Length: 157
Image (tube, rainbow, N blue to C red):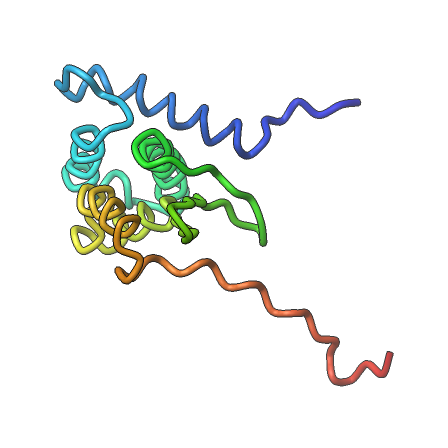
């Protein structure tokens, strides 16, 4: 029997479209989409609804997945790049000139939910242009590679 699960990348795109469909009409924005005003609206939503969003681990995971997908798709629509899967994580890969940058919008949204305005999504989104045009600006590090599993000390082979 074949499993009908969506691929990770298809799920990300579906989540981003879901955010657009659900938040767009409520936003009051004429053009809710993959753009800076929409990112600002979602950042404000996280501020206004923090108690609901951060009420339990399932809610945090849900909003991280949904809004992280939308932020990532907005980055792709505005700056280019592509989703990349590897090392058990999904992140954005942006090539600009001779440099390759890795961004993790899911981690940024998760940090925004847990730590608040210190991880403002609107600033994050607008700062990407500066990172791309000035490679000396620090960026989010690529996720560390997982350590190689060592066998327990008591096992000889």
